[in-house]
Image 1 (cartoon, rainbow, N blue to C red):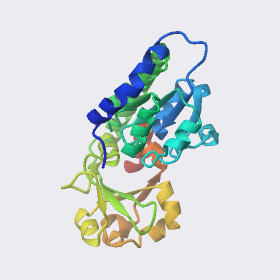
Image 2 (cartoon, helix red, strand yellow; image 1 turned 60 degrees about the vertical axis):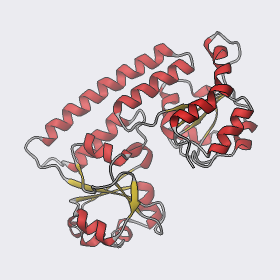
Image 3 (cartoon, rainbow, N blue to C red; image 1 turned 120 degrees about the vertical axis):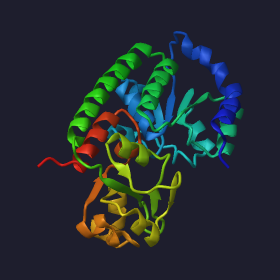
Length: 290
């Protein structure tokens, strides 16, 4: 069972709000920060506040320095003992963090936990940037980063528009496969769907939200021009050719022509500070020049 964002906020107010005044005033001791969510960890580094980090979750793979920090497990399956052992004075996470029982344990321990929305929009990235700046008392740095990201975003969107001129948007199917026994495709209201839209492509999979298991019928009905994977999924499968043997993929236009793309998962789906460059790279791959 997942807590709604509202109920999580209500849950965390008692344990977290009391600690906020301490962060809002000048303290001799800087906060001991745990970041849960790879994109949030990237933002902490972009703000130049990595020295505050005492722990991260297993999705915090970029920059490489983050992988050398103490690990607290996977964002969706945290353990309170591991978190509390690092003696954090502040934990930041996206709304995917859980399970709810662990959040309640953190509340009981009176550890301030702040859950930020994981919106798959550029505006959501900017909002998370500013919220982190406020929580960590680095508003000026957050404003400067937000302005830089906005300029990069505007530039990337201009370049994407130029690539798309008088060209038919490709139909793309995103395939999530971190294990060959459970391969899923992305519908609407997913990070993959948002990225495809920003890059000027059409999600070939329609009619449902979230992810569902790949079936031969679904793949053939989608008839994608391009198949999009993550680098981690390709590696786990043993290569592109192994993935193309999945049910129905070889029978799609993309499979027959072997029009396949692969991107690092956090870059493609994380909606972190690399978003402007990631969207442009995806568009350039979908609209090759020449």
